[in-house]
Length: 184
Figure 1 (cartoon, helix red, strand yellow):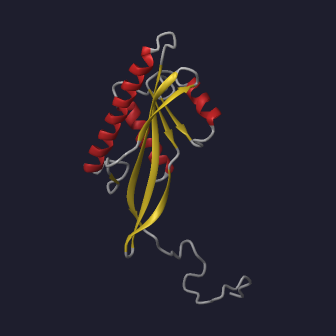
Figure 2 (spheres, rainbow, N blue to C red):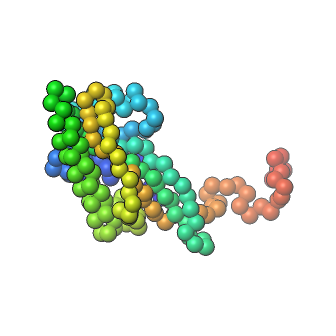
Figure 3 (spheres, helix red, strand yellow):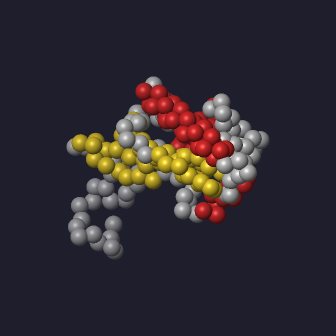
């Protein structure tokens, strides 16, 4: 299973290592995590506090658990990141240039994710990632003068679904219907 912190750490590392983004935490901020993607004021504040562009905004992961086949289960994470560039509103041609740049960076990040999955380095060794039919769309203006692209993706990782003595008091107890006032 992939935790939210592992998810954030992976994309932070991408922002640090990309030559155009070059995020340096607490020094040259070019990455931010959006815990509530529908909270537009938090997104605007994060953009204002980000020190440079292009920048990466990573939305909180969402997803589902699925049965792959009998006794084989998957965590399917539906994620989204946005690449934004600040533009000069006095020169409208910069909007198109910024969006072209953000589209290219997003494509490069997806290619890195695919390469990492192939080499078992995408967050965890067994994470699978496919570029088949991944949606992307332009965004902007955000915080007045930021434009770019949003990219959606799905990650799949095998997980266990077990009933454990470490979690439950009554794993071996055979009572049904459930007794809400057990004597033992």
